[in-house]
Length: 308
Image (cartoon, rainbow, N blue to C red; front, side, top):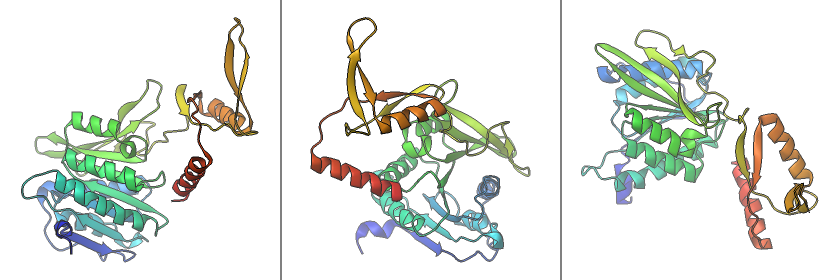
């Protein structure tokens, strides 16, 4: 075994085996809220029946994770996998960046084996969450049908930065559960990132929770809102290839004299219709010549990404 693999200290696999019930071991009091609110999220988001992959940096008690998984009970049809990445004794970040891609790769293989999967990441470390986001983008861990839940207590500036700067947090079905400090009361707030809204891209709160209560949703905001049914007039960049009869660049005389570039073709017409329905404007990017080999490589890569 390579030395780097030794630090992956826990791999608990119960894949396709239902949990028998809650563990009899004690649960760290400071982590109790994570199990409670996580189970409520799974129920409210209608993903309680899905298989579950949990990735943690070790800061959350493993007893808490078992508590959360055990509470799912016999009504679930999927199994659970827990990856715990050990901390570097020296506190370095290279360690995190070397191990998380291995964990994400294994998680993606599991996603391909199940029809419904949710991913839960538990960490209060922005570096850990950034490394997870980067690895997930590279390995295509998260697709639109995959629900992602991030349980954390990072500061609000860090939360805004994470939600805005990483594709899987900003553009995919991702929900951040952030603890909120209240003297003597455990509570949290739930946030998502909306890339398109009437006032532009924004981080919004969709719900809140206080210990002993159910999740309180913000009116007209589900836990996982649709992000692409209305672009609110935003400009969307488009790549295109001049292949007749699908997309063709044409030059016509402008109203004030100078010639202007316009487009025609089946693909252009379909995209134009979509733009009208979804309320966005098209911005075809400048075309650069591709040779046949590059085009074939692009087409194969696109097909592979669609089906995986």
